[in-house]
Amino acid sequence: MTFFIFKCVSQTFQIDCSEVIHFDENKLEYIRQAIKYANSKISFLIAAQDFEKIDVYQNKENEICVLFTNPVKYIPKNTSSYVYDLLVNLTAKSISYGPISNPKNFVEKTPEKVSLFKRTEQSEQAVQFVFQSINKKSKQQSGNSCLTGSDINGSMIIREDSSYYAIERLSEFQESYFKVEKNTGRIFEETHNHLAKNPEE
Image (cartoon, rainbow, N blue to C red; front, side):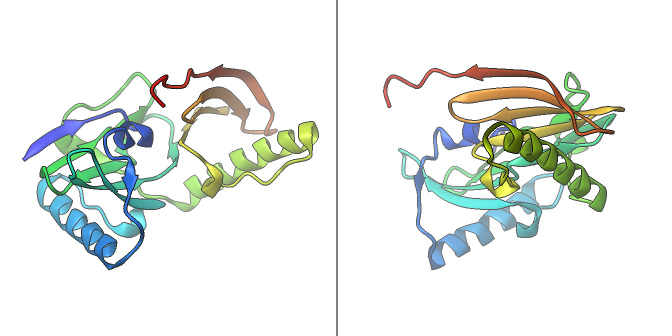
């Protein structure tokens, strides 16, 4: 088995596995096979309900890949590394994942010590608080206030600090960084970077 660790952003995996196989009986079977294979090779167990999205892709070499993702990644303060996304290449028999951590500069690089993040009531409340703050500001600025987790195109990382949440929102063409104050929901220290489109596209 070939084993890789990549940055934990779903687009990283999709570069080589870009052609979606439409939902059918084969997709369900590929997902079942991917879960079984992953659980036989990695140090933590996964299940379909651990992920918000599961997609099946076929890359340029006609290899079948199953991508398990959680677009919104909440990381409690002072934690070690957690895994949120995972790619299983069924043809090449390889597994790819990238642990992320809080604080940001700490990443556990020993595969047997990382674990899959499990959503809790506390984490769900924190995520909803962040979305409510974003929606409140968006409504004040443009009248639009309907952002939900299912609307995230790319990845949103929410790192908890003692008095605020540090947010990284990453999509194909933009990176946004800001903080949300815990007591008030105030958004501050915003920066936005527009990414150049690949000239080959």
